[in-house]
Image (cartoon, rainbow, N blue to C red; front, side):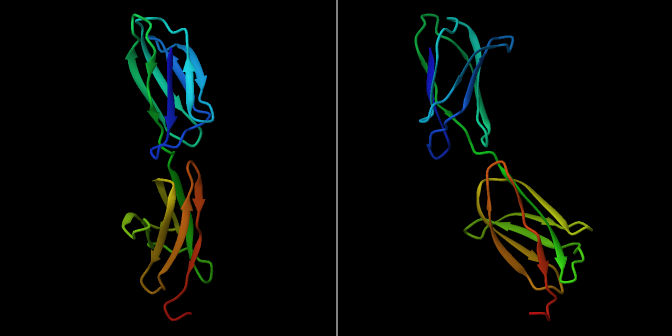
Length: 173
């Protein structure tokens, strides 16, 4: 028997995680789904067998281990930690006449204002920032001759956040 909780890095349970046991040939031999408190239970596994156990859940990454089961048939307890899937940020930067702005510096800062990422807009004014952990960020836009701009955003697990902005000329208010 194999049983355990699944949880996130802050120890919250992950309900609905799919737990799959694969044999040495990577053929599925058992599957379970974690309950509302993150627990699952799998019975009837072959004693002494080498198995791979994988765990995955929507909006989370996956985890897995390779383990040889106890020949005496003892219960195995294993806790899996699933990290939230990253999100992404994209958008277009334009001037007040709706023309795309090239070479705009786009900086993504965490809540303590530490810069995590910096990208530059392309010729169409487009920017993309991938693999952001779910959370709140400040995005700063700057280009010589334009007023700098900052916006607060929330990145959600597994989702693309779109933030289109307009930068005004320095003399515009």
